[in-house]
Length: 77
Image (tube, rainbow, N blue to C red):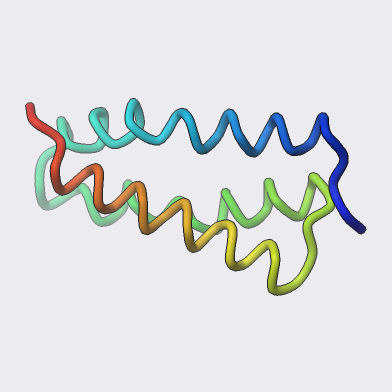
């Protein structure tokens, strides 16, 4: 099933929220950050809930996590 425009807007909102989430994760103690970065399953479930299936959903969630990890690493506290 291919997501419609409304679903694409939800996924776009998740992507645009990455900088804020990264800054919040950067504020967490370093030893607790890996747990905070285990959100990929949640992103994958969201993609599935919006109609993305299989490889498309996995690739989307993985891309979100790569961006989130990169921005968390570079976030200035």
